[in-house]
Image (tube, rainbow, N blue to C red; front, top):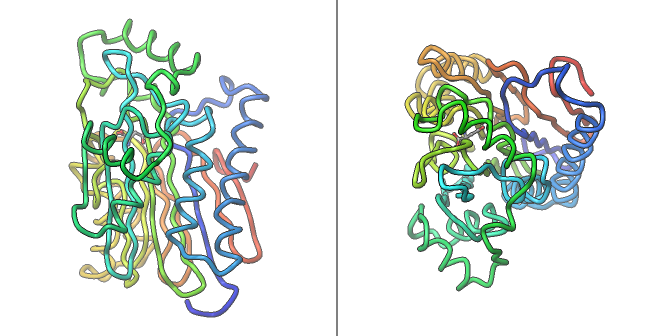
Length: 312
Ligand code: ASP
């Protein structure tokens, strides 16, 4: 896709049991509004001829800044009541990638993932090391309790009652709201970005798929760009994001077949979640095996936001 003025961008705001009865009208419209704002942030970049990398980062940054999603402000609480953030970015031309886990202070983790990608030396940095590097790059840093929100505090209390000393795998619904974006720009470059606070009540130090290139995020100009959301352990074990690309490149599957197969694979292992993907022609697919997935897309002539099957 190299025709001028053609571009596509898709976003997600997490997958899970999104109960129609439980989601109030006010919550629903706030979420839809934020998804639209994220699409607009990415669209502005792409319409002005900007790169897919800038577009996915702009779209994700906008969702990180909203307390309605589990990324940046509004991130979930860990076992010790802290917020540990993860993010990753990848572009499809030179396969550069940047990723981070267990940041306690970076206000917009996607920006740090992008810096790591652009440095093009190490791919992934964890914990204090990544917070220190963000400081060196003068990125905005905040105290860890800046990420606190009453809604996530309440979820954490519920999760603790449910499984105080177990892993979170049996209450995986207390996490919805990981965010991600995939895009193709007017020059045919594809890129993907994902950002999360992880899983509610996660053991401190746990790393999920969002921080792992190939699992939660992947991009290859030959095939597609992918961003995932769901119970990370299954997405890691099924290497979901790269599998979509590899099934296309080496398995001869169509774009839609490959995306569905990768989602089925983690579902077979017991996982739930979804992905958004864009192929090298600008086509979009967004399969999931959870009850719903906050998502949307924009092309040169269309824009839509979904929670369940019908556009909002
Ligand atoms: N994949 C994220 C994690 O496991 C959570 C999510 O997408 O909801 O950390």
